[in-house]
Every structure is written in C-alpha cells, then in structure tokens.
Amino acid sequence: MHVVTTTRRYKNKVYQSHLLRRSYREGKKVKSETLGNLSHLPAQVIELVRRCLKGETMVPSADAFEIISSRHHGHVQAVLAAMKHLGLEELIASTRSRERNLISGMIAARILEPDSKLATTRWWHTTTLPTELGIADADEDDLYDAMDWLLKRQPHIEKKLAARHLTEGGLVLFDLTSSYFEGVTCPLAALGKSRDGKKGTLQVNWGLLTDERGRPIAVSVFKGNTGDPKTLMPQVRKVKEDFGIKTMVMVGDRGMITQTQIDEIKTIDGVGWIAALKPAGIKKLVEGGTLQMELFDKRNLFEITHPDYPGERLVACLNPELRKLRGHKRQSLIEATKLELKKIQTMVVQGKLKDKGADEIGVAVGKVVNKYKMSKHIVLNIRDGFFDFHIDEKKVEAETALDGFYVIRTSLDRKQASAEDAVRHYKKLTLIEQAYRSLKTIDLKIRPIRHRTEDRVRAHIFLCMLAYYVEWCMREAWRSQLFCDEDQEAKKTRDAVAPAKRSEAALGKVHSKVLADGSTVHSFQTMLKLLSTVVRNRCRIPTDGPNARTFDVLTTPSAEQQRAFKLLEIIEV
Image 1 (cartoon, one colour):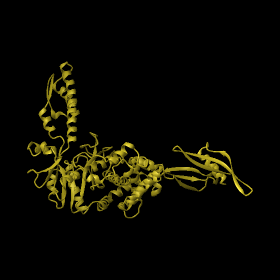
Image 2 (cartoon, one colour):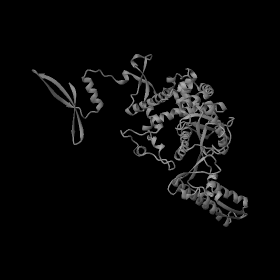
Image 3 (cartoon, helix red, strand yellow):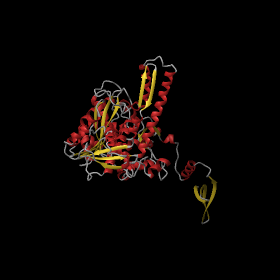
C-alpha cells in the first residue's frame, strides 16, 4: 500500500487529492486499487501514513528526545558575524585575551539588549553569547575591570579606525551632545546646557567625530558645563597629530566653529573648514543690503562676499518651506501667549489680582512668556494692580525677515567644493544627529549614565561608540531590508537647499510595509528580534537515563532569516 498525491487545476485554483492505494498483480499485469481518500486528513497525518507505509518506525517525540534548555542564538550569530567581518577583535587588541572577549561581549550586548553591567551578566545567559565567547563565568566586576583595560587602549583603537576610514583631504564631522547622570559623585558631572531636555540634572558632554558618511572614528568626553567651541581644537589636533592626517576639512555647526576657532584654524596648515553664520551675522547682512529677498527669485542659493569675512566664501540659502514653517510657528506662539496674557489681564481688571503688587503680577506674566519663549516680541506694562501689554510688531517683522535664511561659510575654494557641495557637506552633520538618536535613545541607550568614576564614564561612552560602529555597518548591509533609502548616490546631486526627501522606492517600503518578494520590511530592532527566534536547543534522549549525553539542535532559519545572515557577508573593512 502507498499514498498517491494528485494535483489538478480548475478555474485558476489548484486542487490536491491524497489517495490510499494498493498495488496487486493479476497474472502478468500490475493493477492498483483505491482503498480510501485521505484528503480530509491534516497534512501531517497524511505524511505520517505515507512514511509508515514506507517502513519507517515512528515513536513519540518525547520518547525520542527531550529539550532541556533553549537559548536565543540568531541575533547573537548576526552581531558576532558582523564583528568578525569588521575584524573588531583585532581592532580592539591584536592578541587574544579574556579582556578582549569581555569587551566583545559587552559590545554585542549593548546592541542586543542595552542595560547596566549587572543586568547584562544576567540577561546574556538567556542567549548563546557568553558560551560563544567563553565568558559564561563573568560577573559585573569582571566587566568593570575589562572597561578599565579598554580605556587604556582607546587611543590605539581610534587610530586604527582613522587609518581605515579617514582620507587625506576628506571631510571630518564633529558635534557635541550631552547625557544626564544618575548620581552626583562623578567629577565630570556638572550643570550645563542639556540636549536631553533634563533641566537641573547633572550631565556630561561628549562629542562624536566621524568620517563623511557618519561612521564613528573617535569620541571625546568633557565636563558637563563645557561649551561647544572649547571642544573643537582638541579634535583638530587629534586628527592632525594622533591620526597623522595632514590635510582635512573640519565640518561643524555655527555654535561649534566660531570666529575664535576659525582664527586659530587659519594658523594650522592643511585644515579647511565648513561652518555657518549665527543669526546675528545673517541679520547684519540683511540690514546692510547684502542679503535681499529679490536675489532668490530664480535660485535658492548664491555666493556672496563681505568685508567682515575676508578670504571666505559665503553661500546664502533660502528655504521657502522652512520660511513658511517658522512664520507659522511664531504666529501660533504669539497667539497662544496673547491668549494667556489676556486671562491675566482680565483677572487684574476683575479684581482677582488687583490687590497684588507688581512683583506678584510679574511672576504670573513671566510664567506665560517663558512658557512660549515670546518675551522678546512683547512689551509689558506692569504696575501695582495694573497690567497691560502689546506686541512689538517691528521686532516681529525684523525676525520674520530672517526666516528661512541660512548662510554657509567656508575656507574651501571653488575647485575644492562648489557652492552646492559646500551646503551638502554642511548638511552631513545630520548624520551625527542620527548617530546620537541611535546612541542615546532608540538602540544603544547610552543614558542614563550610572557610573561614578571619571574613567568608567569615559569607558562606557567609548564602548557605546564601538557598538554603534558595528550597528552602523550592519544597517548598511541590511539597507535593502530595512526602512532605509537605498539610493545613496542621489544625495550627491539632489537640491542642496530643499528639504531632503526619500526616493520613490523608499516611500514604497514605508507605505506597503513589504518588499517586492512579499517579505516584511523591518526596523533594525525588529530585524534583530526576528533573528532571535533562531534558538539553540540542548537535547537528550530520556531513555538513556539522567546521565544521558546531550546534543544541540538549531532552529532551521527561514528564507528571510537566511537572507539577513547572507547580507552581513558583504561587510568589509
């Protein structure tokens, strides 16, 4: 007896029948007889009948073997594969050591499940990570010791990264951010300008230095009250002296590269720069007639010169969409402020605040104007038992005149960069902003910083930078599978001033949520979660007793998972 499966197509539908048949002989002829129709049975039952009729012996799965433990493996395999293709272990140290393995483990853990060092040593035992790296016996103190070891190697590692990715005459991007502390004992902790929106909390400032693609090269840590301009020149000297790059173009924002820093850079051979004017500088150009709306009738950028900026090229840009947005936002804030101030005015008139002095009324008014940041546009008249205000229309008009304008300033001549390219180069600072979002929030979660000593804080931030280096390369390899724009070449020729827009292909992925082959489009995190469903099962044969030998069985990856693993093979140094 055997099972025969037949397939037929009718009106664009496919029908399958599974028949139980018997073959027999009549004389010299072999005939078959249908004994029953199995089509109504579940597919696995039909397959079981088919295999039994072929002579296979079936036993209950629980009698054959049992799974005694399961650990997530696929996402670990992916990260370790990326680290291998990057030669990360050799980058950290050329010789094998336990410290190198612990650092590799912490980098992988930061990508897969960012948490405190104590929590990390608990979490990673749910995965194959510690066994893959031979660090299953490590505790949090071992991780702290490894961080101290890593910090001593930071200059060597950064120098190797610079040799890999920085080129003579190329762009070097640098920007500063801050992260808040949990605790008060670290010498680096100080009150300063918070980029986390955490007013009144101690913080540390740190700056990321990258190549022109936003790939991290080095990170520097400063006290929390250090101003942006003070952090620039150490980066210039690091690239020139430590990394051995003789010629470069430093790109920084208008708060980073100020006139003082430009004057100092001019004394250093081989260093060009790209920055932007502050609002006060743009206002002076507008009031002096150098910058006029009529100049932008047919173009959204053009070059100008000004005696205040000798030997520099100024590229004036006007973004009409940004102009409309800022004008609308300002007007909305002014209207919201007027509405709140009128409430206070009514309370004074009705006597609810009439007996209050000017100080008490001023406090109430101050809360409103500070809330909407519109005090510069409002003229206040506050006396005991009296309050009035009006909008300073001249100031509003003066600020409105600057809406949508920005001016790029650079030392590069036209042979080194066209006006359009100068603007595009400056806008590459958004790549560092993307890195900060990944490092601080959605992926690596560098904050809050829980370490108490200066060296541990520096090591923690450097460790996170190395994790971002691996993640950056993984994202590039998986670009076709993620919500990413694959047409990177188009960025080199797109309108330098207009807001960046995704390609049609990228928008298609966002709207449909599926790729051309029907598979799911992922974020970086959901891709890792998909791969984590590949697990390593530790099994044994129960009939062999409690001392039975164990063996491992891996989940067979799906086609989507196999493609993700395969794409990581394109990573190269």
